[in-house]
Image 1 (cartoon, rainbow, N blue to C red):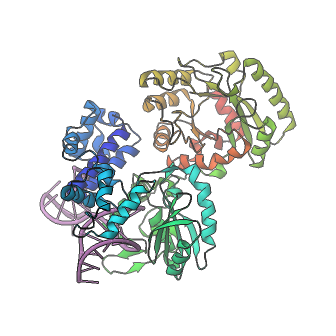
Image 2 (image 1 turned 135 degrees about the horizontal axis):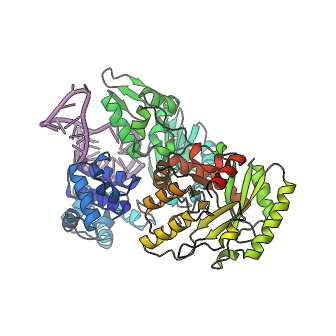
Image 3 (image 1 turned 180 degrees about the horizontal axis):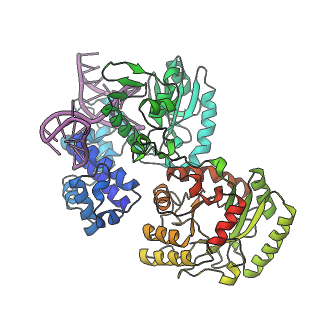
Amino acid sequence: MNNAQIAKIFENIAELLELKGEDQFKVRAYQRAARTIDHSPLSAAQLVEEGRTRELPGIGKELAEKIREMVETNDLDFYQRLKAEFPEGIADIVSVPGVGPKMASRLWKELGITTLEELEQAAEDGRIASLPRMGQKTAENIVKNLHADYRKDTRIPIGAVLPIAEELLAIIEGLPGIKNVTPAGSLRRFRETVGDLDIIGTADDTEAVIKAFTALPQVEEIISAGPQRASVRLQNGFQVDLRLIPHESYGSLLQHFTGSQSHNVVLREYAVKKGMSVSEYGITDVKTEVITHFADEKSVYKHLGLQYIPPEIREGGAEIEAAERGEIPKLVELSDIRGDLHDHTNWSDGNAPIERMIEAARAKGYEYIAITDHSAGRGVANGLSVERLREQIAIIRDLNQKYKDIKVLIGSEVDIRSDGGMDFPDEVLAELDVVIGSIHSAMGQDRDTMTRRIIKAIENPHVDIIGHLTTRLIGSRDPVALDEEAIFQAAAANHTVLEINASPSRLDLKDSHIYRARELGVMLTISTDSHMPEHLDYMRYGIAQARRGWCEDRNILNTRSLPELLEFLKGSR
DNA sequence: GCCGTTTTCGGCCCGACTGTTTTCAGTCG
């Protein structure tokens, strides 16, 4: 079992234990373990093999043993037995917004409800309203939420959310009396998918602003609304949570609402040990009961004796300990980027001529751009034959005479064939400044075959960069099966660069892979894989992704100057 | 179920909003 599968089982166990009415702290232990395993840069199999599972925070004797069982037998007896205690459809019931484990458990035990159909029936015929401590309103909400086309776990790729969020922010900024309007939550942390839009602001009269917000024409439905907080569904289907607080607590609110939730839990547990209590209003000294307010976020961390922690790495992992020791790295920034090393033109499947891509890169102030159209190979995307490639090379050489302020690197995104061979012969690859090897076919190969295939490409001295390693498309195509650890080690040993593909539908490598590759000394690039000039703007997503993997500028090849880049490329061949 | 320079037992983040009931449990983030 891989980490994601183990994490899923721990999550399911937590849910079942909640239904069972088990101790909430036990439930939390499983939830925490699920997150820890999911975010672990090392595979569970490797951890088990090296006997290091218990080094993970929140993994003790029992959980380590369960992880071992899952790695070795692909199953977990405890989970199977627990699952057997409940009807199949109970998870669907809990997934209805507003229905939690307590209610689901009562509906099952007192009314025998085990499916969504039975749930709707019971809500409509009055049986739910007749239960003690439930009522007509509860039943109505269940019916309403059943028919809503969303669930608690629907998440949308960040690339689809960010532009909408930015429009919405401008609208909210226009509400009278509101200040400090800021995106928070997973949006601010740049998670690859976002569940709902968390937006915060400050106001003297928070209630008036909430009223104005819920009255916006874009609001389709008010999910909840109080004096400080409103949760609404927009006409475009997005859920937006707006939270307001007086101006003097802005820093604390931003910290609180940025999360992640597990980061906040770990942070607050750390604070408790130091005799402080952290909330969205400020930090209270437990002894004196004096609360300190923070108008800016950095002061919150400072007050706790911690180095500032950038939002992208607030995932409740090792960041609090690192901040305590002053070991939070200076993460790479957009302004560090000096060029883009993966760009297509209308010679293959891009939509713009070479010169327009160059102009777009110049407008960004880049020192270099690599033109990397597809190879002919499997006919993907109007790929270039050797003849057309040589024709393009000649044109780019001429363009380099014309442009003195930017270097146009001659490159290609070359298919890695199913046997690990490259789609151009070595003597052709040798003519190029930059060779990206990418998987575009035979994605269904088994793990061992795929791993060997990619490692063969990594070992090819002409291949500089491996593009979008796992080929996943967020929300629509699963990653290929591969042994990441072996691939990262091979990349480090051969000085082959791994790409962080910044296209928001890919974000490939993913954050935990970036973290591990960087740890193993793999050099990375952040590349937009642009197919039109506007795509160069995707760099911001790639930067955020690299930051989520704790990357500094030195980990990213395209933060280097042109001479340094050329030297690296020459040296790695 | 985890964890420990105050603890191997007794803690475990903190608060808004809702619905149902008049003080709070459940849900959510």
